[in-house]
Length: 250
Image (tube, rainbow, N blue to C red; front, side, top):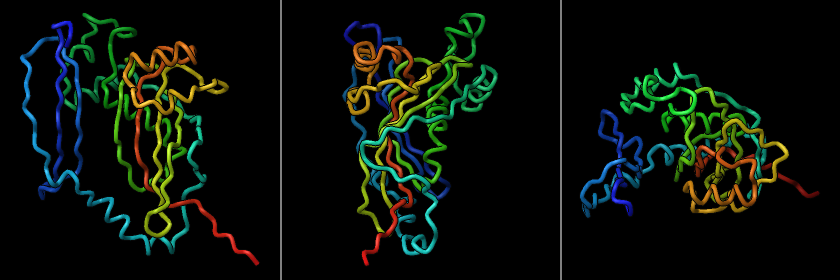
């Protein structure tokens, strides 16, 4: 980094099953509090990463699904804003147990002798993502396939902070086989805030620069109530049965 005291490292992670088939892949960009020599090593792309076996299998069953009633309760259109009513928290004990299960070793997740549990202990990023998506799950429960294209962790989450969320539908693609549709949605997780009645700025819902500095700038100038309250910005695509109803003209 420019200050010479930190390093930004890009990781590419792949999860395969016992048959060697790719189940999940992710690219992560992490900031470390120590300098390392610059590297220009580039990992070549793997052909299997472009494969979407599970998604293609679901789409291939469109004829079967057409004969079943849609479980999509709410029609969604581009430009819709959803304020999710579900909110929940995670305790320090739960966070500690799940972090141990995932073999996380950073002291910020455990060491209460060195860090204050209410202000300096952090909930791991994977749990932040899970809490954010679970807060929106009631309104997207009918999804058949989900792909996360980008996650930005904006502010730290501490144990017992209450997490809520709101989502903005950026696009609805109906050009899928049968009665499927693909919804592009941005879900934003917030901590210890009730966003009902809050005027959420459009720039926050559409900006591609979702790093902390830019999100804080938007909130401070356009929506002060959300300042320092946004914990994650998640962009994803959801495939589901459409809620369209056929209209017959007599």
